Each structure stands twice: as structure tokens, then as C-alpha cells.
Image 1 (cartoon, rainbow, N blue to C red):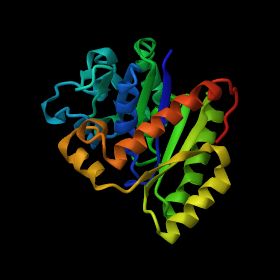
Image 2 (cartoon, rainbow, N blue to C red):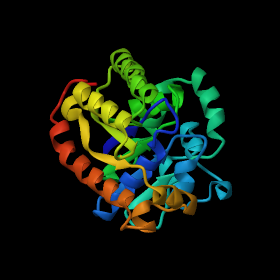
Image 3 (cartoon, rainbow, N blue to C red):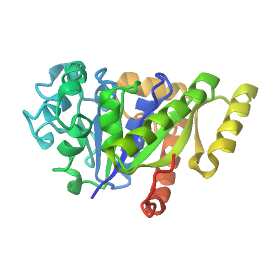
Length: 264
């Protein structure tokens, strides 16, 4: 079965989608069969791997409402080992419809059950909220990756997310482990960033990734081009950072799978 990783933070603008796209691409280039699932109605992950969401007739929405199997909405990308479950604005409707649905928090988990055996990794890019779509992403996952800027409000919001995850896990009786907290948009020589990064490492210990994603204009340019940075400019520091992060993820997962309790 695939290792399923939710990439989540209720605060927007912390590099969540950038992380989902580029970790997935780096894993795929390492010959890991990878499925990237866009759970955000904005569809930025979908566009970020070169798929035009405006041209799609089906998307994750149709897998959640039961009108399509999730395998029927999967799209190819430029990387052979990277497949995509796309998002469109239809997902806004799903946020409303799922509230009254049976097994509402398990819809994504149930949908993915038919395809996870075909992948090594499934990465889920959750919306910047704690709503029903994010809850579906967390329930469907065994691992949680939290990107955060080295800024006070982003750092403080991690505690809110952790409490929601723990509450969900207890209430719905599933298990999830914190794979790691990732510092993004880090600026060398910025005293505040240094202080908050140290606070994160002090609080999370070895759950804070050693890899840091430095602020890099080429990452923004790759997003505009609809390409993972690893394809857009492999020499860029952003590409090197995300390749290092993918290696760290690969190194952490076997150990994490031995855990049997929630540790967030």
C-alpha cells in the first residue's frame, strides 16, 4: 500500500502547494510511483504540474460525490511516475454537500482505497483551512507534513492544527503520525527567521525537518510556468532544497511506519 501524506496548514501562503508539487516531483524522479491529489478548490496544484483545470470535465469532486471512480479522474503529467487527481472550482460545492453526507470525513479515504496499491506515495495538498476537505485529507493519510513560514502567526497556528488532528483521530478512531514540520521561505541573515526557526526546532525536536526551503525567486517562476522546479531549473536552490527534502522524507518513512500511536 502507498504511503499517504497530507500536506496541511490552515494558514495560507506558507508554501504548502509548492511543497506538495515539488516533493511529489522529486519522488517521481527517484522512480517512486507517486499520486498527487489536489484537494484545494483553487486548483493551484493542478495548474502547477501543467494541467489546465479549465479544460477538465471531471475532477476530485466527482470521486467524492461517487459519480466517478478516482482512477477515472487521474491525469498524466510530464513525469512518467507522477500522476494527478485534479481539483476544479466544483470542489467548493463538495465543501457544502459533504456536511450532510454519510461517512463525510472518510469520502476521500474510501475513494483512494481502489488505487493506493498502485502507488508508492500519495501526497494530498489540503486547502488552507480546517474544513471538511482538509479533514478528509487528514483522515485519508498515515503521515502529516506541516509547512510553515518562520513567522510568529504561522508558527502559532501549528498548535491549532495539531489539536484538530488529535481530536479527529480520537473521535474517528484512526492513526496518523507527524512526519515533520518544514520551514519554508527562509531568508538567510534574517534574525527573526533564525529565532523562530530555533523555536520550531526546540519545540518539535527531530520532528522538524533538517532541510529548510530558502526563499527563491525561481520557485515562483516555476509555479507561473506550471512546472515543478526540478523540471524548470534543476540548478536552482529551490530544486536542490526540495530534492533534499524528498530524500529526508524517504529516510523518515520506514521508521515512522513502525509507530502505532498518534504523535503530533
